[in-house]
Amino acid sequence: MSNSALICYSKISPNRNSPRKGTIKGIAIHCMAGQLSVETCGNVFAPASRGASSNYGIGPDGRIGMYVEERDRAWTTSTSLDNYCVTIEVASDPKPPYAVTDAAYESLIRLCADICKRNGIKELKFTGDQNGSLTYHYMFAATGCPEKWIKSHTQEICDKVNAQLNQPVGLYTKTLATGTPI
Image (cartoon, rainbow, N blue to C red; front, side, top):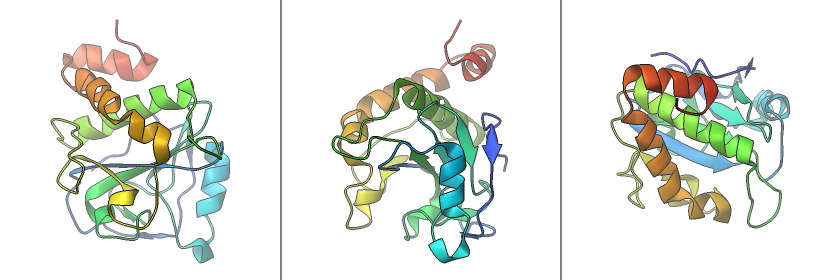
């Protein structure tokens, strides 16, 4: 099991189980409810007293940080979902509709495609329950996370990720490196 080569920052949190007790079957997207940099998000997850973490975080500038390696279970949803999903925190506005920047959104698409490709997830699919390869925190806990903006882009996220998954290998690699296909 590998980690994404798209990361530019890493600060591994003590808040994890090593190794995860399940095979990665999907992705769980969360919103930060704040425009936190990848460094600030790493600092939030750094103290053991926090009792929370995620595998990855995306800052408003589109930079990607890693806080828990994919081989390990992050403490993101506080449910068994964390054993089967790679979790991503995305910087967002601190108030409704919790919008994300264009740069963060594009990085989210690239990171999701990368996670799917490396973990053999053939299609990112939202079913509205735990059976999809894209899940949200609100399905498993009393929260609105990932909030309105990301929820309203669910089908578009799946479509864009799946378009990258269906590209020939050379084109997929170029898309990951540049963010746009040739």
